[in-house]
Length: 408
Image 1: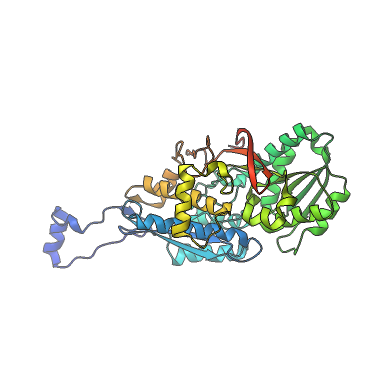
Image 2: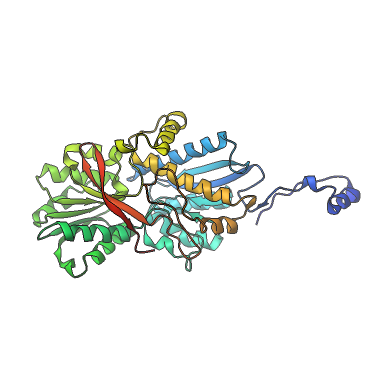
């Protein structure tokens, strides 16, 4: 523990005055670990500002802009937030290096919203050994909700496993004589989705007629899409990050393959995926959502959406207002804001984790109606619900009821 100490002069008499209570003005107003003082809270982050998943770099920029707004309004309990973000290029070795720099050199209070299942897997044990909060990760892998094994790590978004289950059940109920093709990123993120999907299919798992994967270093997924079409599949689960998800949508259209198409939520951005893929090519694709989409006009008069647009104009003018990752960054930063606020003047790492595990029906801006943030000491899945949506025209249309996260 690193505690800031205020010096004093005057020998024994000054020391006696301090101990007697008359010198208490010199004391701190709070209890702190590394990364926090009377004036500042230092929050660390790594993200893919370069590399194959650079579309997600938008999130870190949005978080930075959010905390600039917070600081302009006086900070959190009177303390300004210093957001320190480094590029990890979506590479686990670079994530390890950057994380060590943040913890050991920058002396951050916590690591926040680091992106990618592989990257977070690479740093999870280190963060828990160091007992540094590893909070609200930008990955829906189900492994982030295991407080007994990793008490310093907590996810944020709905987990991939449950999303896969939901897609499978919808597919079985709506696709006649289903023959299923699956494209999967070959890592823990892809496998988590795929395992949930297989679980959701249950006894019908044999309806998967073709399963192909790709590496993040591959230039395209064109050959994989051709294989899926040739398999005779009439339903498609697209488990891909934005660059490859857009390629898959476009290639399927180019070769005239028109399956019932399910797209994982992490690639549901209109600006980063659907527009590059071509709006005509993305019609009727189905995905899951828990956040309001900025291109969905039904939210135009919602107070949180109006506040978000004002924030975009003032604090993040270079950001694309059609990119859902700017919605994500704002909402996850608001969750961190609330958690730090609950810490009061006890900005220790242990208390930060305690408060992160004590979020009760918190209405975070831009979550869909009916969805709130909830955690406890035994429940590290903050967001546990989604709704399905279908792509129409140039935006997503929600349908069906709110569905809960079964994994929690």
